Image (cartoon, rainbow, N blue to C red; front, side, top):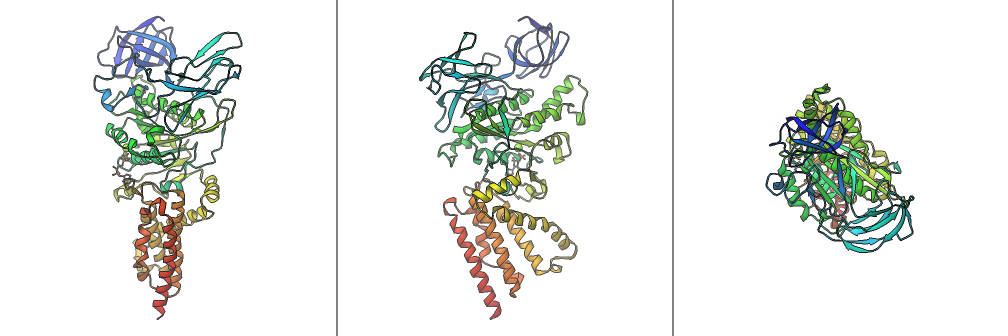
Length: 588
Ligand code: ADP
Ligand code: MG
């Protein structure tokens, strides 16, 4: 292809002329080092290019060559357990980006070309196959079978396939197309990142993505295939929530994208994740995890690429029929990169300087989540949940990025500065947050966890809602103005907040709470409420109830190990006994 010449370099933006053969979204190789860029605007023969690598050292006159292809990711075995940068180059550590290790430019291979994989053929010679059909599998890690699928645009008869051990770029199958042409397929596919992968159809999510985080699962549940936003000011716990989900959510595959945030957070991930054991598989959670790191010190333009790289890898595993969860921390940094590029292109600015297409970009991104029937003859189902952190400046959620996100996602976990200041973690505001999947999940929880699950949840939430107005009265006229029943209510809501909603991500046991344990805990607190009401009715003073020794045990329920959760039932019995004693004591 004919090459053009750079006429201007402005940070990550490069303008080249003589590019009349190229089109918008073509990937280009910039200058001697073949830095990777993407055309984001064409005017006549002038291409505006966002460059995904450091542009230092390049300047006017340098050559630009269009590849004619859109920005794509390389998909195949060797993604799991690895970390990549925004344009999917392998990172051994975060030092790579600044050190000499990582070469710049197009010569870097994404997937390991040395490693050999055992391909087990599932299709047979003579089979007619189409896009999405499974040809064979590879044990990518000890817990994930990687399906090798027929790539887009290919269909025909299998003329050669067999079990074989080899590298990703060697042929595993040969397909004869209808026109007689033979195509050799290896284990690699390249998918354009800006395009949602084709599916058969979307279906309604019907199962929870269990996170082990009490406030989320009980009150604001997310589904396999659901979308959630976590807006919150600096330090309110967005990253901790994302990490908790990456660690504990019962997804089969996790894709974690660190976008424009501090590098040390990704270092934490790298230190911690390999040590953590997935309860479902008994293996390290890294065996099912892909990390994408485009931290704040890396090129700004690649933030957008990191988001698209992440969602495309997620779709790829979803297409194998897995439930995938993708976390993006933070989507605001992506939006800021869009704003910066838009400014450099001198586009007409929209709200707060963000480009007018911000909302549609955000919507297109979250639209790629969902529970689907995948392409392929076996009608397999896959699900992709997307959880995006949003960092509104000053925590003001009326700003454009939060607003355009909330318009599309189904779940809103609102993090509060006030709660995090009081060290109430997770600092998810229980009055403002919502999940539009709740009704559907009630059915599931009542059926599979406990028939009282949703009843308990509704009762606890209505108490928490009442708490606000009761506290208002206390502020105005003091606690003694409340009836003893109302004072008891405040005791119970305090218990709900401290003994239930608060959950310490850094405590060995408390960090994860199963649905069964969640139900036992909440029903115990409600049991205490009922029993304490009975005590009040029988003449016990509210002051005595506040001092009951059993309350210590209630506050320590969260530290009861998952193997011992029947202990929580015993606490319920003890509550009744203790209340009986108080009632007797009072009457004596
Ligand atoms: P953000 O990403 O919103 O800036 P972080 O996720 O980094 O905030 O959280 C800031 C700090 O808040 C953490 O370093 C931790 O000390 C505390 N924190 C947040 N969530 C929890 C939690 N669930 N349990 C304990 N501490 C938490
Ligand atoms: Mg953070």
